[in-house]
Image (cartoon, rainbow, N blue to C red; front, side):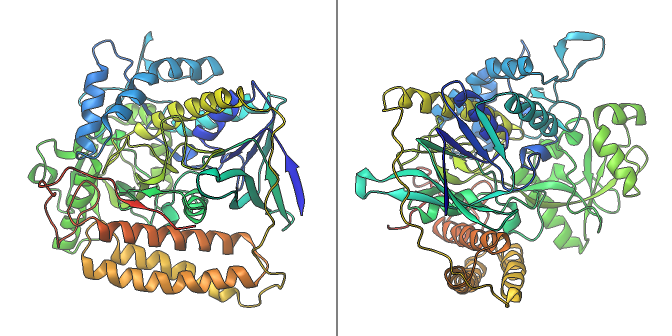
Length: 531
């Protein structure tokens, strides 16, 4: 097996990972390992923007309070304050790198700030309606200009390397599959950054790209790290309902600009669920849509923004407007059919704002991490803010630690002990379990849950997990098998976390415990594999 040496290893090429890489490149060599194409990440699909206090009439206190309210009592207040207040100078750093946020027409000294569900003030910076795509374009360009940064596509992480025991455990790097050649390789580094994004593909319907198979959470779990709050799966309320759309996201910013949710007969319904109407937080909106669809027997609801002119919609939402036309919908003339789909995981690897984990040498930032910012429900557009702030803080923390260490210290990787050499002729096992796990999660672990459904789902998923792990140990590994192994592990973590939380809070709603547990202080759900 080939072993590569670098100073710093970053697994993932989204906003968090690339931000950390740029910071780390000031001190040493950085290898950024990306699973598929360089431009493919959850960040690239973010339409709305970055929530940040940039309006003089807005305040940090308001943004903090909006985040706490959306998080349903489970946010860590100190973390919320740290991330919210760190935003503005880092936004300016992004602009210096070349990212151009929209300005008000004729007012080049004022941002064109959007408003989304749960926000009490306009504070969402955006670049049209493809902010994430622009963020990645700029960061990849800047990383490519840095001679100390090596960008590698088609490197899929298999597992984290762990050496030592007890308090002396540490991560000296990771193993990868080169998807282009099928070969395994190891990477040794003084510090490893886990920035692999989310896990939407654990469910049948998601707004996430195909790469979002929960790889980082699964690897961290298998390495014995604590995993927090995996029951809080955020369903984006408004994905375009069309057989060819593949859950194309209709940004929450559309509702921020006046879009109204209606039933198929044209009646507005959100006012019956929340006084904020269509601008209520995502957990409330998604449950309301789910209830309306099930009660009425409809396959979707409608999002109506026809009160806005075609000129405004083309300017504010150029990507959404054009894509909807391609699917046969003119959003200026007719309401859009929409349904909820899995969008974001509030839980993940327990990590600090600075990315520190319980495993020495390993840091986690972005959606793969659970810092305590989102609590039981993420406030819209706080995800890119978290990725930006925590990616930067992770880089700083590693450099501060590295300054105290031996610059040549790179422990050897342990012996690789997994994976067989035989090529399987039973690929149907992988494809069948892939479909079965995702369908099980959608049918039994969705927006509204019950204990009996969760128990049924866990029994099914655990059987498939055992089968997949045996398959992994017996045959030559390949990318589809690795992804299946990861979604099986993440699915089990979601279900076990949901069974532990015997209350309804934020994104976790169960008919067996329909109210929040007010008799005890809110707590994080924690799962950890004994190693």
